[in-house]
Image (cartoon, rainbow, N blue to C red; front, side):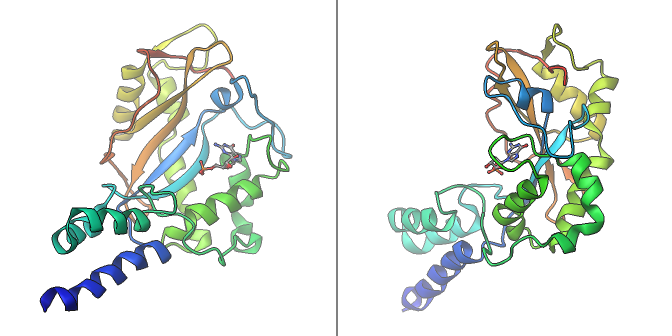
Length: 255
Ligand code: 5GP
């Protein structure tokens, strides 16, 4: 009897995760090194505002679950058993069975007017380097808002202002330079020295992602800092992720 009453509740709460998907545990705040984005065999294209500064640029602020299947997973297992729970959860964790919410409100397109006072700062700190679009960084911000921002529980302006504030509070380019990690075509830096410099300089551990340069060498590509659900304070990353660095050292290519 209990199960009959509870089952629809569990199912509806799981399905509401996929339709609304406003529940998450922390943000990944992801910044990309432009020299590494541009230094692959594919290259890059500068935005219509010109070549960005030799500084980390924002890629996105992404709501994320601390565990793939979250609290709903535990509840479902208890109620439904492993197999049924796995099927329902895989529908609930994201359209492609991922571990974060995405595209939470397709009707909520980014309005230029809502972020008009942030334009200049966004153009400096969140420039597009992709050759796929029109070269307008607004297209990149709109995409990030639609895919990730609509799941953030933040209004449009707050979402972008929060990302800018976190970046400004912890200047990664300066932090790395303070540890002697500066853009160079000849130097190689140990991955652990980069991790330590960021942990020391910000007070919190981040995750690193490498990519391959046109010469096949590992480059420091993206830094994933973890931020609380209010998008205000850094936290230690609750999840580690594969760095794709493969070796012990990385380049920080000149930009
Ligand atoms: P995401 O990684 O947020 O799922 O997707 C990033 C999307 O934004 C891709 O479709 C990519 O082509 C586009 N994009 C536009 N400009 C940039 C850029 O400067 N860096 C990255 N990583 N993606 C960009």
